[in-house]
Image (cartoon, rainbow over all chains, first blue to last red; front, side, top):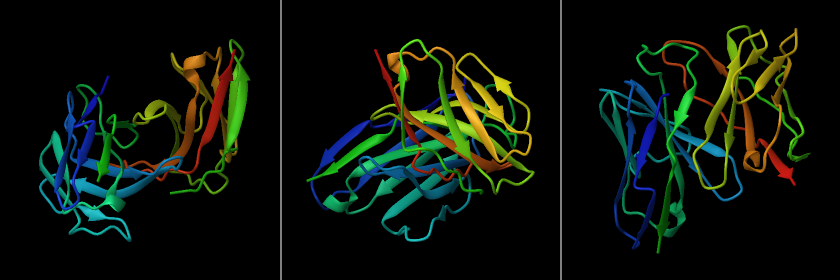
Length: 121
Length: 112
């Protein structure tokens, strides 16, 4: 089945550091990937839609200069949290739609990475 | 995307069927119903989806009412490992459909 790999799974770093999170679709091509953020005991909140070869689309209230998204290939999207501060600490999750050996179809389910737990000290 | 409503929590005895309801009364004709679950500290896992017909796979069954305003996810023989938050989502189909709006979901606790 379709697999989405997210790396790293956990990051602990000092305030002011920039952190890059990778999201890869392992056995399918994904022209679109999605980035979510999740606070403890809360639901997933969509941050942005990552489009291969073009600019990402950000949800209202999400700072595009703080959360840089690059989707340089059909299998890789990256989220960079720039100059991270303690309030950026959260669980970040990516997803992509697609299936093994199939072109992207409209009713394909999303497949999620295992998330990255970011802790800023 | 249409909004969904789910009960915040449910309990189920191990080995029994777990029936998780979802209301999506504003669903439109081009929206599918998807179910995902999230086990603590992991990414959501796809379970099943459907448009108007009932669906079954190795994990679960999905029953969609005739008017499509509600659905029920059925885990036929719940195990302790099925304890998770279950999310019901409706989503427009299309060539780049994938954007999902997550509600609060139902926390299912399977008890021995």
